[in-house]
Amino acid sequence: MPAKTGASHSFGYFISVIVASLLVEHILAYIPSSRYISRRVGEFISTYSNVPVSEEIAGMLLITGLLTGFWGAGFHLYRY
Image (tube, rainbow, N blue to C red; front, side):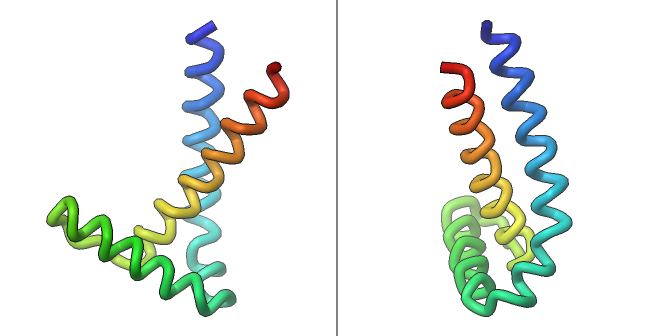
């Protein structure tokens, strides 16, 4: 069972990264509040990791996290 769950989650994460990298520019351009949220997420990551993170990368990480969470929740709801 862990191999099936792990494979599904890794595939979901991979697809989420690809989709997030394609969507981040459009989301930042058309939803003004997302730029502020993305900037705040980047500042949070930079504060705790001491690595500068741009708005686009922070937005991509945020979108990836949301998509991966939806994928995992959907997988477990479908499975059980």
